[in-house]
Amino acid sequence: MKTELFNLSGKVAIVTGGNGGIGLGMARGMAEAGAAVAIVGRNEQKSAAAVAELERAGARAIAVAADVTDKAAVAAMAERVARDLGRIDILVNNAGISIRKPPHVLDIAEWNSVIATNLTSAFVCSQAVYPAMKAAGGGKVINIGSMMSIFGASFASAYAASKGGIVQFTRACAVAWAPDNIQVNSVLPGWIDTDLTKNARKEVEGLHDRVLGRTPAARWGAIDDFAGIAVFLASPASDFVTGTAIPVDGGYSVMA
Image (cartoon, rainbow, N blue to C red; front, side, top):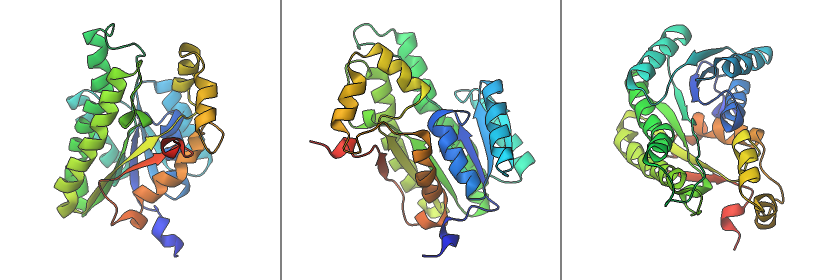
């Protein structure tokens, strides 16, 4: 197989929430494959550190501060990326939060915050980059779902609803934008060692051992486990792959 299939040289990727966790792992992978990367997040210090890391590895990268739930802020972000990096080829909708409470005690403001950050932001960002991708003759959108897209948990009602929505939103966009040569896919991370899951292990008793017991790979995932799937879904290698939901979970979702 030709390595050119996975070459992202000359491409520009936007990664929301790309200053840490899974987003940073994906940004690293795409940068190593040759893409220029725009790191989008609200924490400017973390974003600057992520950009510095990518630049040390030889990549072209910028940081853009934006609230991804705000349509005007996202439009300005997309305009800046197109201006500073020249184009937009790839969007990774990774920004996300979780509030761990059972549904009967979850406040409506908390529900709205999770849905806005995890699901509405994917809609707003995808809509913002669509014109640039269509004008360029194609593009790639990668939406980050979760194991909670397919499983339930007492402490994750809003989170699971948002991530289930990501899968259906992905399918709708894949069908709508196929004539424009835009492939839209989702990735469903399993239990990955991030700041988000470190808090989960503190808040959910026994979670660490239950995850290890169910995962055939017998470990928690690492953020760099997402470099490869990011490159695949962002590259010509996936030009006939669209509307999918691909678990990256060490086998967690297939374990009986």
